[in-house]
Image (cartoon, rainbow, N blue to C red):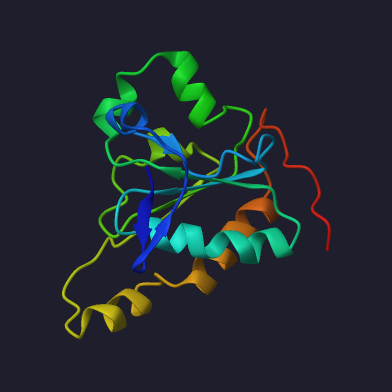
Length: 162
């Protein structure tokens, strides 16, 4: 299967079974990520578009589509670990809704690009840009995670090539 991203099909190689599991890895070629970007639906194109910019900076990034927290939470610990390895603390969820509940999936060292306010009125693309939903902002927030000091007991991400 593939995902449609900005009118183009992204061949992530995911299966219907992975979709039924609530979350799956879009770019399986990265076996040893230092950063995980998570999108839920309409946000997936942003994380897909951010990947090349992060790779150009030497960041090993995993892309995860998580259309259903509930289904993902029901999966075995082994499957959840295969999608969101505990050792990877730098996680950015991109959610065009509230951040409430994301701490379960991004952890104390992660971050959420979300909309925790309301009331903006303008064409959708302008509102989303104002809220920070742009490739550049996703890249900026992701890089900031890799530079942030870790919580006690957390594994620091490996240094990136500059």
